Amino acid sequence: MIGLDTGFFIRLLKENAGAAAVWAEVTAGPQEDALVSCITLFELQRSGLRGLTEPSKTDHFLDALPHICRILWLSDAEQMRRATRVAHGNGLAMADALILTSLMDAGAEVVYTTDSDLEAYRAGPRIVRL
Image (tube, rainbow, N blue to C red; front, side):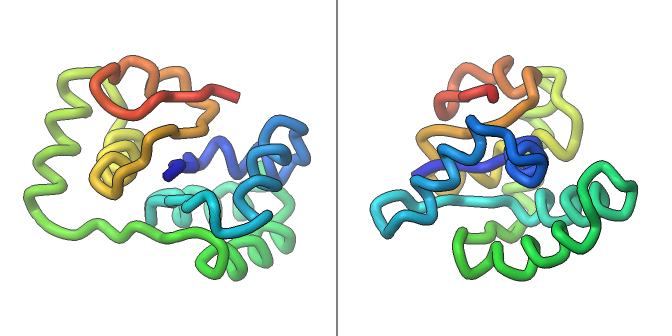
């Protein structure tokens, strides 16, 4: 299973070739389960509202995303505590720690991101920075 971070989708919405190649694999068929944190939904919506991505394109993409990827909802206090430890031990921002923890809990083996901070966490999935 692969995890897709917010930066991945921002690159995809801006038509980055590397992100588009990964997305083509995800949408080609059932061989690759793609996992997305609910925090990413928030961050993508915010990127459209701020003009970082084209707002209507972002809205349409967010409408389709749950039909393509498995959305991971934050589940319980223990998950929050794990995310706090991941953030504290690796100097990650809250959103990054919540995203990474939810992806790890769901079994992501690889995480595609643009965030170099995620590379600080070496005990989890392989981090591929676009």
